Length: 427
Image (cartoon, one colour):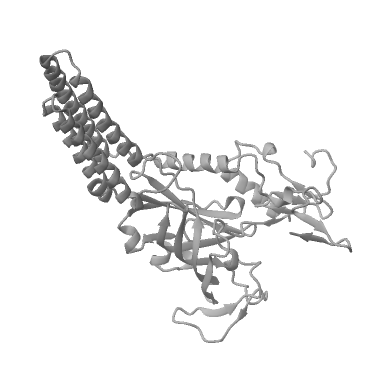
């Protein structure tokens, strides 16, 4: 619209990624509202070609390819974080790297692959900043272990490799524990202003098959793999808002909790049905049996409490244990009621009815529950897991703007103070 209105000089430069136009004097931004949604990619490419033919300088991002080798060494649902050991490799094509003095050769000796070791004077021109790589890392938890940078003068490919150890934050949703699923997000900060990250490298780069076939490989340390199962990860390499998102999907293995928590509680509660077979006149024996089973279940819960997360809401295991306690309480109440029945025949009929109803309801519930477990119906879908995590984040940050850039100077005296000479000091 500005061009049609005659307010601009002829366009001299167009930045394809930042969507900026320059006429040598002024810079213009292309708003999303002004885009033509029906403009196809081929038509847009033809427009770029016409721009180049007419002498307009078209600036595009350089292609880059990033790979991750991640080992998860610990998952703490209680603290909502996980520990990783990460190998990060980035490849991009820049044949004039040495000539333009963006980097210098570390030595004239190449390695086995013909790559010469190089040194970058700073990290500003790199696709990723190795000293500030993870967007969701706990402050002070990341350790920079290894750094290697190479340049191949034949192919013009730059290869950087970094190794980090760190602890990353994550929202853990445990309502269905131990049938819970967790999305472990790894946010990689990238220089999306100068580089466009691809899901796979071009063939002309001639990278090895091990590198080009898989951009992410996540595995669990043996101690963690005994508790969780790793599923294929999800990737988001669009580079939106200056980050790449890698999502490791882990699902808790439930056999341990079936064998050591659910099965003992099932047996303890099932034994309570024997109280219906005791003569109603012997109420002391019936009450002693139920109280013994109830105390056993309470003691058992304390014994397994170290294996159950300490959180403020009820998990599936908590509700199951609570249900067994209420069932035992029902048996005790029934024993008192039948003791005061008008006749012995009525007491026996009530006991037989409660015994049949107890076994029918109790075993039917567990048969249906086992069927749902076998068919995977008790687990949330991955879309629901991510949606619940987002809701939890919004609830935690509701009404709180954590961006200090939005705080005006002098608004909050606990954030900003002024010294005698007028210099602003951040507290």
